[in-house]
Image (cartoon, rainbow, N blue to C red; front, side, top):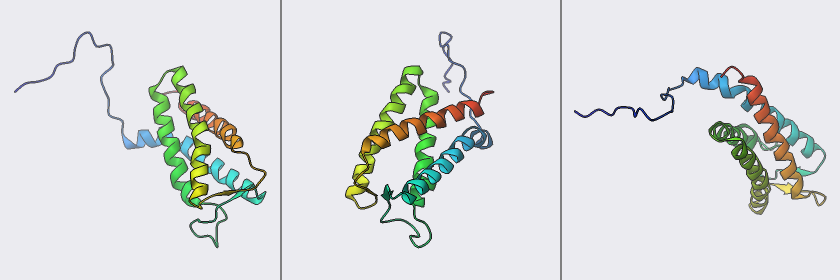
Length: 149
């Protein structure tokens, strides 16, 4: 039977499997903050008639799309945080800028499918700036809550 030995020239630490409670403790505060911020911002902008969600779950109860707020946004933020751990400083800047510029494109596609509508005053550059601030804030909060890791 052949066994694989670690190369002595390899400077990486041994890979350690993290437990589920550890991962929840690491990511849950930032993901929960993203849910709260996303819900609050959606409620604010829908209340100001800046945009609306024509097709949404439970339209008689919620004026916002809770599927995006409670499933899509947390998933996006979780993947974002995991990727941010894997790259250097310029990679972090690149990922944040890329996602911020990509979100208005997703908004435009969701408008084409009838899932999202903006008022005539809305400019998609607002979404880019908003998501840039949002992702930066979420990442800073993640760093703040994970200083000991």
